[in-house]
Length: 496
Image (cartoon, rainbow, N blue to C red):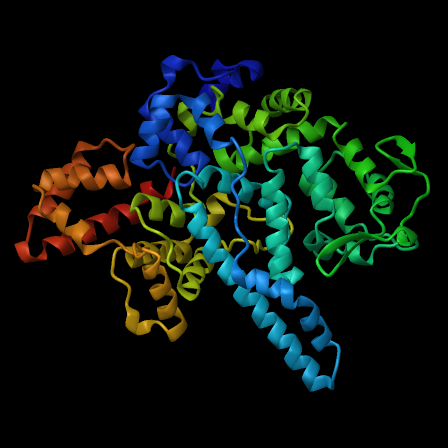
């Protein structure tokens, strides 16, 4: 990091990358950080178009995530499920609650698989990763909300506002039924304001620690009283709202929740907070010096907090492409998994038990972060257990599915997918055979180009070629699989 910061002032750092510095390596860096991987086709397109056109095309409009069938059914059955949990004797109520939990769990698993399949498509990956980032800021968790339909709604609201402005998104998410349940606004009323949402609004969603006082929290909490969710819809209960005078950030008035959010975005810290979070999520485990994120934040604020302006400035900047930020960022479990599917040209299998189990063992389940702070990331992704899980995931994708281990529902899902023309859930033996038929040196270069395109290491290529040339010709496919697995499990493949 020191190299970039010595050579670039805070204002220069966020200037566009000069055209003379745009090359294949820069294109791969952009795509690997913007999405999950840099496929050859997407790299060639980005190299031809340039960074500005690539970003404009990538974030031209939100990507729709159609409501999965089990989520729609859960929404439709929600009122009856609530009624069932409130009638009959204790045992009947217990069974009804158990049924509701199971329905919610199945719906969340189904939604997760559908989202992974959407996010794995290279053309959708950058927008889906941006939504994942915003969900890691505006956190809600399925474990506490206990209603997968509301989790779907929350992420849908995020994606609808993801290319708008930060103040508008903040106002929308303050009304999210999932957020109302997650941070206890449901119980907040004039005579007893609950401070949870106001505290996290300032600390974790918009400003960061040290940019507000306890008095600001207490006063702001009063402005959000009366926020309710009823049957999955936002309801403002005026009689439970504190309409009195409040003082927040030194200003006094009969503020509503929206008024408080407007005051938030008058603070300097509102401009710098999200850029700092973007650095941690997309660029470097180490924070930039404050003057750099201050410069980006001030420019973003002048542009009305438009997300498009922030995305263009961040991913198009000279600093983003600095050499010290390349090839040294630890992939999250989701990036590792989805990057694997892209690099191998696969589709995430419609097998929730296996796929969700793998993500859980690697340490990252979509829609269910560990707490309101979201995922910490960085070196926390890597330990002996999670590395073993990553190896298991890579090996599973390189071997045919063992249908003998699947239950009837899972076999049915595979049949439905096959009927729809989708069956590329693991690497086809024919692809391994094609590599095995190549001369060993050519096969080694092909495997390196797939797994580690940024690493030009003749010694490694020679080692791979030597390994592929050894042994019984009848075992050539197995040697290719072993070589590819070794590359996909390597320390270099864990980085982008």
